[in-house]
Length: 175
Length: 335
Image 1 (cartoon, one colour):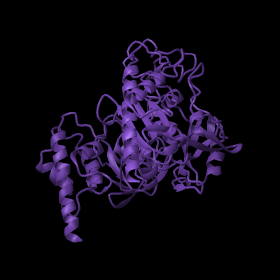
Image 2: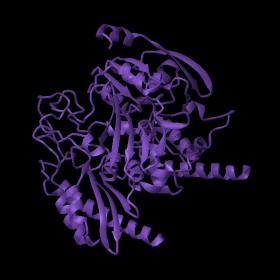
Image 3: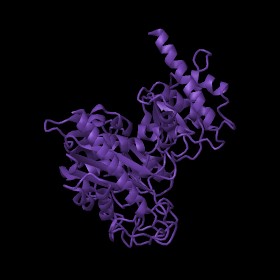
Image 4: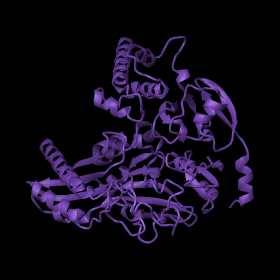
């Protein structure tokens, strides 16, 4: 068992964490209580990921950890040692927007834009997930962890469905 | 967020050793409850032991037909697991009715069992709450208690257990495997969570330093139908006002076996043996379901704003039983 003084001393110390962020190895020094969201924004200056509620209720902080969409406000950075993190900054590849980004532009799927990075990260994960059925209700359900206070849901849904059809068509062409 | 120390463990015994049965130490897996409550200063761990590296992420069918689920299997993976979808559809439905995609991707099976109430007075460190701070009183009792429980309440606490997954497990029947400083032991799922009584701070039967390592579901009831109905203020991503999980086996229009558990209305995952008794050997008809619903809610105790939950839960029970019977009929026809 640890003595209280020892615990306090340890908890103030920083820890080295190795992450692969948007394909690049990154090393950071954080105290154990730093959540992934704050590490990305404050340590790595990747401010595309937004802080909304900070309690896993709004989805503004959604990023991918090893391909899964998660709330980065409820994950400690130290828990992500060695993991692949994708943020909204990593969606575009080789100067080409991700299909979800193109679809959000085309469908005007935002108003103020604060929730948009989180919405797009959830949408990008959904495109790859065959367990989510194609109908509108299933997509709305899968996206329900991302709140939009401007109420742009109608266009968000259209954008996600459009991007999903585009990716599905591309997959068929290739196969 | 307050500061704490952090370590990882590679196997169960190492995790238990690092925990040291110290009440200032907490295990962390998904972290969706723990970190939320640390930010609110409701939980105050001095150290976290990360159990994500433990080899507890497998789902396997045992020789006796039961399904053994590792503690760190995520809610998403469990909901979509082929064995769960095929033999425990109630569990899959309940899991997918809970939280959001992101939270289900993070939240684990054992963590879901350990999640805390969403009572706003519990979550507010400045409010009186016997569950958070024994003896401080209960601001929910005469406060805004619309979301609170009507079953299993005490004069100390009326907080609702928030889980959907646990409602399915209560109906299916399951066994928890625990490992702690004194070794391994098992406990029935329905004996794990405690009623608040006069010690609402004691939420479950875990001993100091014990870790849930597996949850093993009872063998499925052959030919049964199942349905999870969740009623809430919005269609998705919201806790239940009332939910009902029903499993029913029907033969020649008569209910051979029935399981019913309720969520959103009780202080723990609520298995209703009263309702099951009222269903057994009775015709699979709405009049039977209504009698079962009456039996399930007969001991309900309302407070100022939550009396509506009693008729709401009764309706949820009738509808869930009706749909489960339909599901059973479909299954019978396919055989």
